[in-house]
Image 1 (cartoon, helix red, strand yellow):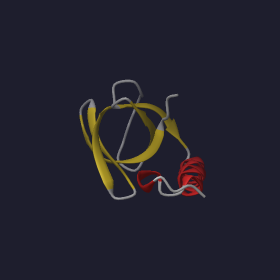
Image 2 (image 1 turned 60 degrees about the vertical axis):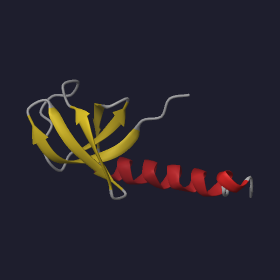
Image 3 (image 1 turned 30 degrees about the horizontal axis):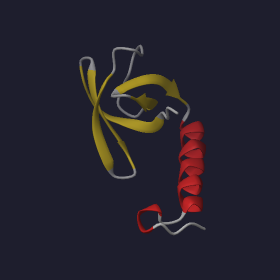
Image 4 (image 1 turned 45 degrees about the horizontal axis):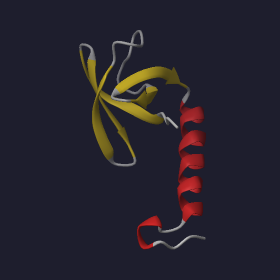
Amino acid sequence: MCLGIPMRIVEVDGDVGIVESGGIKRKVGLMLIDGAKVGDWVIVHAGFAIEKIKPEDAMETLKLISEGAASLGDVSSGEEK
């Protein structure tokens, strides 16, 4: 299964950008989307921004990912909810 993560662009340098979500920053390729600019929300997969999305859609997706992770419990200790 593949998962794209919503992240906000915080820096742009040509076809490379720095994106951030939840305090985590990553360098990504921006060549797959047109007109990427600081402040845009994008879906990041395999090191590339693959699609621009609306901020409200990004927030909803991040909320669902967080809820899904919380429902799994502490996987590292083998504990499940």
